Structures are given as C-alpha cells and as structure tokens.
Length: 216
Ligand SMILES: [Fe+2]
Image 1 (cartoon, protein in one colour):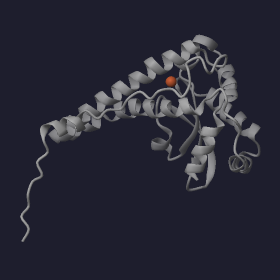
Image 2 (cartoon, rainbow, N blue to C red):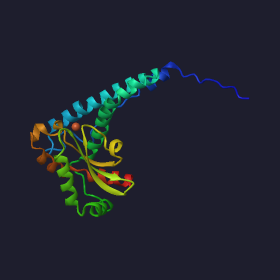
Image 3 (cartoon, rainbow, N blue to C red):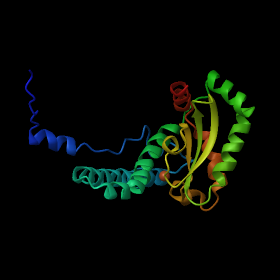
C-alpha cells in the first residue's frame, strides 16, 4: 500500500510561477529599418507603446483570471474573456507582424509560390485580393494570408479589432497587415490603400516561407 503524500511547494517557488509574465519582444531590426515605407516614429510608438500596452494588459487580465480560478468564480472568469481575447490577440498579432516585415525579406519560396498559384492563380492576384479585403475592413483590424490545414489551402481572411486569426478562424497565420490607424496614420493619414500597397515592399518572405513550411 502506498501512502499518498502531498508535495509541498515552497512559497518562493509559488511566487515565481505567479510572476511568470509575458514580455514585449525586441524588434528584429532598428526602428528606422523599414523607412521610407514605415517611419521610425511610427515603429517606435507602435512597438514601445501600443504593443507594450497589450502585453501589460494581458498580464493584468491573466492575473485576474488566476484569482477567479482560485476562487472558483466562473462568472468572473467568463467576464474576463473579451479582455483576454483583445489583449492576448494584440500581443500575438503584433509578435507575428514584426517578424513578417523586413527591409531585406527575400522572395517567396518555390513551394509557397506553387501553393499561391494553385489557390489564387498568381502572386499578383493573391496580393490584389489581400489588399482589397484589408483596405475594406471597417474600423480597426487585420488582413491575413493564412493556411487552412484541413483543406490544405491558402486563404485570405480579415479579423476585427485584435481578434487573433488562429483562435477565431482556425487558419494558421502566415502574413498579417495591421490596419489600425496607429500603424499608419502619422505617415499616410487617412489613405489606408497607399499604406497597404506599400507594405508589400517590406514583406519578410523568409519569415512567411518558414511559417508556411511549419503550417503544412
Ligand atoms: Fe498595431
């Protein structure tokens, strides 16, 4: 007969777990690296203020969620759902977005180009459709090129606010375009189509190729 013993966790270790938090990832380039397409001023504000706020609010939300779980308060847990989606989505989306961009992003890989041709007819058609749908987003949101693992196909989708692509549509995110005004207004004012067209010049295809390979 085995005796059941409780494993005692020292308070110091519990505190370390409780303090495990999300942090703002460094950009893989300087703030000015994407000029003239995206100004250093926009990049610095976007990363150090906007993304940082999503990270801080995600940590605060998860702390409240943990307290609600500890108390067994299901109402409080449910009430935190929208804050978790918004701030968690903001953190996930921007973490992908920084890596999706580069001043020296290379070209689409042969397998990705083949898939694009199969699903859209050509690279230009894919870009055109992604641009049109992204420009047409009402209010704030994101345009995405994603991969549908069930259909083994690339798909274009848009998400409102900070809704994360994978959690809300099931598509694996490959390339995202942030069309919140904080992403372009200081430079492009209200002319979203010009910003969206320009962003195709700084796609980090190396990153998109890798995401496609991992998603397949
Ligand atoms: Fe943003």
